[in-house]
Image (cartoon, rainbow, N blue to C red; front, side, top):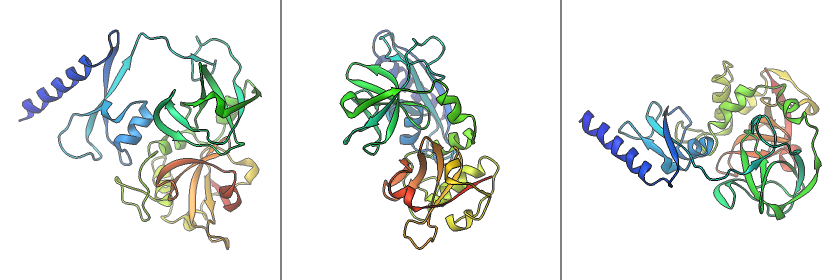
Length: 290
């Protein structure tokens, strides 16, 4: 049975290889599923489509299952990427630009399509790191590039060249990396991993993976750590909100910097990134740091 299963996997990998465009180079990385992973959020984090993740072990999707992640690179011309720590030393020089978002702007994983990533609020600012005909590539909170049509942005001007190092020179990047593993995991009040999660369980699990113990509820968590002023919020700080008023804490998330945070959102129905502007900023009542 084991030999039959291995042979089936080999045939499936060969079929995927045969379907690739001419000139493509392909390899596979073996990945072990962790708590909080879903095919959708793993594909999003890895820059893949869900059908490019191939099961190696038989059985349901659950922690411990091994999968193969397709790695392919074509010989087609790549988009021109602005010089940045992400693009690499060989990228052509081009100043990163701050832009103001117009109403209706939507950010996707690929120019003209792919996974829907985020819809920023009109008037908020994003960072342009790449440009191709009809599309800008913008910096996402997890340091990847999302794509938006040019009409949806209004260029403001070049950035401070040290903006990236300033943004991540403080805070807890390991916490941010762990938080993005849960991106797209469905929301459910009470949470039951690995199938779904709520806001306080999300924060509890992210910090537990980094060696910090937190209680289960948002109100209890808000009593742990050092109080931080709103003007000094750094990536990895814990945010607590009184969404129903009266100062009663009932929601939590993790700051990403640049006015954004990640949380298990009942409104979005999953773990998602939102801006601290607008209603969330008005409801923020506590910031805590270990």
